[in-house]
Structure formats: structure tokens, C-alpha cells
Image: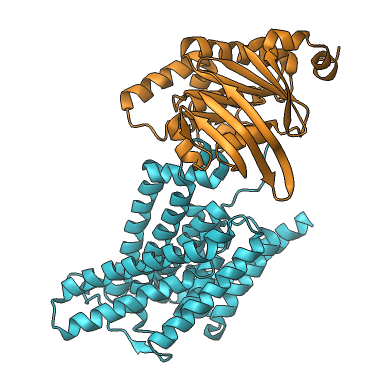
Length: 327
Length: 235
């Protein structure tokens, strides 16, 4: 079985590689455009996937309402930028305020969702919390649909075409460049937060052993809340950025984006933060290449096919730890 | 210093502790012995607030801590080395020790305590950058005790410190426990199945059966007690 898997893997890679190299050599510029498009897409997935993976790492819950938090971030930015635009404020101020409000509202929702829907179920069977998460997701979607509108809303890009970027604009637009750069900065900040700060250490300890964490004096409830807030903040940043990129949003955008980011988190190894980033980039780039070279209609199918393949062959993901504990 | 009054604890429908009365005075070493499933570990978990008591009161230094959260109880100076050691497996030895000092802010004092525990267990200094999960059982027990000491506890609760360790390591650990009691004036409360060792180390002991305390006396007297000898010392 093992040998068969290896042979199959080599054969598939070989065939794809052969066609791949031929195609790439035929039109390198097209290939790089796809690659950068995939990188942009992967960056957005990464910003959302972080929330999934951090929450899973700490309380072993797939927070299905996470995609909605991302959507709420985009919606808030839209409302803030429209209102301030009507008042005729400076566009730089609008960008900053849109981000600030989006992050603030998403964090508030993330925090509240945890307190209302998950905390009372902390000791309940895991399935209960999962169903509660799906319920929260449906509730938030419908709430935004009723409060706003079911249709698509145009989202005027908050990010201008930078003048200094003009020489490169053919390869990658300034919006895409901003998305990639912002993601890199967020990742670095998050890495510092997790690795070096007090709350970061508390998060790592809580993820490894919740009861022991409380026995060294860590307030576990506060750590869990913080995790939801941090995950919501990165999702909100992703929401605003993607809305700028696509140019329109509705109440439903969180659903598919959330699912794909979830796939990315599973691909990288759910619970692992570097895994979520790596999984997102791999998923984003391979989706982009697939749609660019094969069938663009099957874009979403492709992501789910990847999910099925990982679950069959490597359920712990690329960087996931195998769950073996020493007694 | 620490007083448990008529404590009742439940796991779901299971009545695990059925009215425990227990007292630990300052500077003492107390042992709680009993068979598997008697409720020894539950007593410690209830004291630490992890499995809160349904009924009864826990008084520490004149304050009622029955309803306090585990982190608040650690802050007051009660620290537990739980059963199975519970080392953070993916944190290094130094990081594990650092987590023990989570509630402290005195950098100087923490540094001194690092030196103190490295002195107590030199092997930990050698393994300081190794992941906690890669240590042997004995080293993990040393790390677990050191991690608890890093919080500068007034009362140290030890759950089965001898579990699964070679006799020579067990001896070493018990002598260090005595040393901690004498040097740091830390009050120590040991839960053990190894009754002989635990009673020898203790000033006073309690014997537990089916969620209740059945006998209490000094360590020496318990070692001489016929019932205890028959039931727990195999004589």
C-alpha cells in the first residue's frame, strides 16, 4: 500500500511536472502572474486560517462562525468608508479608521460569540459545541442579511494605485502588493506575540495542557478569549483586504472563504500556526495554477478535492503533530 | 494554615469525596495515603479549585477559597505537582520553569529561583533547552517539582511523586522534598500509594478509604498501626 502510494505520487507529479514545465516555458509571464495571484489569495486564506488553527489548538473546536467574523470585518469597513466618504474625509484617514473599526467590531463579535455559544459548552461533548458553532454561523449570516441587504454591495477600493508602484503594476497590482505585504507584517507581529510575550506563552501552555496551565496560575478563560480576539482581528484585516481586491461584498462571502481557509488550516495541520500559513499559501497557489491552466469553473471543487485527499492520506496535515502522548 | 471542612465533591453523579476533614499546619509535611480510587487526587484537585467542591469549605490562612478559580488559588500560594507530572511537552525545560513563575514579576527573584532549582536538580540545567516531552520519567518529575517551586508556594501539593519511577530516583526525590521543607520552610502535602515512604517522610498522616478519612495520626504511629500495616504496608 505504502509503495503504491509513493509510485502514484511520483507518477502524478511527473505528469503534471512535464506538462507544467512545457506550459511555463511557453509563457513565463502568465505563470508568474498566476503565481502572484495565488500568493495574494493564499495570504487572505492565511489571515483567516490563523483564527481556525489557534482556536482549534486551544479548545479543539472548529469555530465555524469564524468566516462570518471575517465578513463582519468587511461589512464594517464598507459602512465606515461609505459614511466617512460622504462626509468628505481625507482618504488616508478613512483607510485607517476603516481598518480600526473593522478590527474592533470583529473582535467584539468574536469575543461575544465565544462567551455566548462556546463557553457554556466547554465541558459538553465536542459535537454540541460544533453544532453551536454552525448555529452561530447561520445566525450571523442572517442577521447581517436582514440588517444590511441580501444583494451585493459595491466596495470601493480603499487602497489607491500607488505611484511608486507603477513600474511593477503589470506584474502585480498595488492592491495585491498591499495584501501580501500586510499579511507578512501581521504574521511577523503574531509570531512575536506567540513566541515572546506573556500572553503568548500562556496561549502555548494552555494549548498543550489546559488543566496544568490553570495549575501554574494562568487564567484559562482569559487566554481563550484572547485567542478568539486575536483570530478575529486577523480575519477582519483579511476581510477588508479582500473586499478591496474583489470590489463587492455581501452577507455570504464569509461562508466560502471560511471553508477554504478551514481547508488550508487542515492542509497545513490544524492546531499549528506555521502550518496554517503554509497550507494557505499552498492552497492559494495551487488553486490559482489549477484555474489558470485547467478549468476555472472547477475552482471550488479543486479545493474540496484537496481536502478529501489530505484527509485520506495525511490527516494530520503537512506540519501537524501525530497525536501520540507518552504515559 | 490549610483547612478542609466537610468537603463533598462529585464527578457527574459519582460522589468522590464524602465529607473530608483535613488540616495542614505551617511548616508540616503531611501524607495522605490510600488505595487506588479512594479520592486522594480528587482531594488535591478540589483544593486547587480544578474540581470545585459541592459542599463544605476550604480555608487557607483564614480566607475561604472554596469558590475561587485555580489561578486565584495559585496566586495565594497553593501550588500542585499533579499526578502524571503534566509537563508541557513542546516547551523547553527552561520555558516550563518559566511558566511556573507565570504570576511573578520580580525578575531578580525568578533568576535566583532558576539557580536554586538547577542546584537542586543539576540534570535540569544540562537539559535546559530540550523539549519537556523528551525527558525521562524521573527527569520529568524533577522538572514538575521545580516548576511548582518557581511559583514560590507556601503550600506544595504533591500527587504521587513516586509513580512509575525507579526506586533510586524515588529516594532522591523524597530526600529533596524533605530538603525543600527544611530549607524553604514550605509546607508540604503528599498524596501517595507508596505508604511506607510517604509516612516515613511525614510529620502526620491521613488514611483515606472510599472518599472518607478513616484514620489520622502522626507518621510514626501510622507506620506502627496494625490496620495500616495490613492494608497498606503488606505486613
